[in-house]
Length: 489
Ligand code: GLN
Image 1 (cartoon, rainbow, N blue to C red):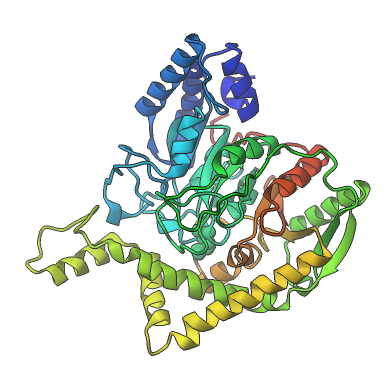
Image 2: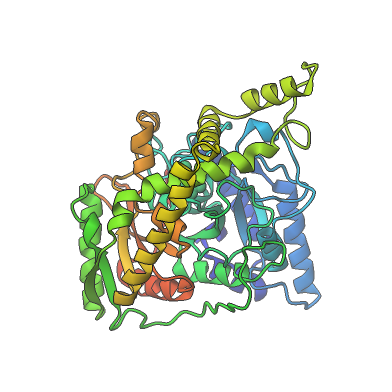
């Protein structure tokens, strides 16, 4: 067993008991990342010096007999829309240039205080808009199980890095599926917390009412350890909820007697064979564990969630991205003579095609002549969707859903039909509209070697219960393995 293969839990135990040092763990993880990067391109920035300094500081604390924290010596990859003081943060966009934030995102502050070590910043779709990781201005990331396929997105770099053993965990953001979908495509677990559970301060905004930070890991227990550090109130984020005190100690018999629902309205939708197989397998496990399988109805979700989500996400994006004008930060051009021309130049050169299209669409959706018909209408549909989930959770403790209708596409094929790409988010984005927590758990590998995951959803603030249920499932299905695709054999 190499040090980079350890889980979060094993790393912390080993470092704290001086079996090995934080510096040894960091060097092993960095070597694995460097060995894989030429094939995977999971990282935009490798933070060798920063991580080494942090590792030395942890080792010094241990030598002095001080408490090094609950994540002592654990390397982490952060999606590159999470601000890291003094370390370039790009959101995978040219418009941010080589901007180094003057402050840390709250989540990164919490991880540092807990003893984590920064290994690098993960590649992503520009401004988190996409589900392939192919819309980055730094080039695409490959899937570590099959280098010809996409790792999913938008947090594809964080997911691929966790799957390939760069680090035992990573952070991503999930606005409409960007943690849960790449987790499934890369064969690991990923958690999107309840909206308001984790601070968004210092996280580059896409759709502020939908965005949430969450972890990727190769064991459910590791997700819980990280969530215990991240889930706390932050006065710097007005949507962060106080007084919840979530406790992530996991319960071993979490599925016995629980009602797990399938959604009637999605039953006729097409689903790839290996995903259907995975569903059957999980249903058998649930029955064996003594859960009751029930059915719920989510007709508005099935019919309108995709349109509703894109109307809201794009409207919020058009506002959030208004700040990138070449004046305050990031990319700028020196050639223009008046300010209007400069804005035009910066924004047309700095943003990629997809981001520009979404800003323009979002601007139209919120234009005063149309907003009643589009943006306002979408917020009303959103309220109905939230209510439908509330009703459903009166009849069920959890909902079992696919993550995507298909397995990961070939790189290059993924962007051929934009609408089809948006529609493939139908299983993930309803969760964000309703502010719910969602867990992607690894189920197994299909015959062609691609991983398959499924999602478990719960009511708001059931984050810990979801992870407990995930732990039971993992006991039957097995833990994710490290993908070997990144390294030459
Ligand atoms: N694919 C969705 C979008 O492009 C979700 C992305 C995300 O969760 N950041 O909006």
